[in-house]
Amino acid sequence: MKEKRPHIPNPPALTAVHRAVVTAMGDHGPLRVPRTEVARLAGTDRQFLLRNWPDRHKLHLAAVKGELQRLLRVAAELADFSDMPPSACLAVRQIVRAARLVREHPVTAATARTEPGLLHAALLQAPGPLHNIALSWITGGPLVQQARETRDFGALAQLMFAVALPFALTPGSGEREAHNARLARLLHTCTTGTAVCSHCNLT
Image (cartoon, rainbow, N blue to C red):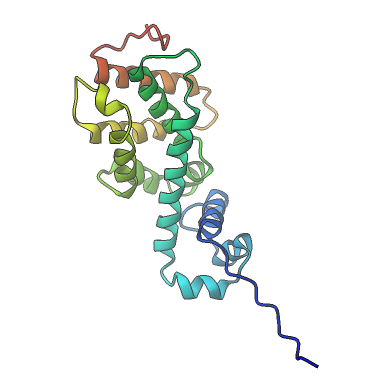
């Protein structure tokens, strides 16, 4: 009779671990992420995390960078182009959508609530790992072909994060559309030389 071997579960996928980190950050804040909760959410144990990520800060940074990349992909896919706008308008709408996703993300809200100084540093001190991801996304999109007034795409990446800050620090202010409009006007000025756009209802 064969001896029954204990069942050893497969290790979780990297995306599952990153998703667990992001979820825990949204619940507790970026500096208060319990390793045991991350393990539970990822369907593994604490020892697995310790073996693979002895430096938890590297894991947390990788998870945040991966989440930002996901948000930027979503922003590019979900930007409103039902009215068939010019490509410059579409690029602006993608960045406005990305900024909104960043500023309304649970991790942004948790950071504003628990570590506002860290939120300032993450969003406003460039260059940094998050800004580099945003810059790569912006320069890889249609904005590059449309920008005539500026070639400082780093400033556009900075702008995308800067507009997230006041909303995160004053949640429920009811200024979502006002933030979107401010950013859209600034981006239109950078790309076309004017903040006025009939396609985007900017007057």
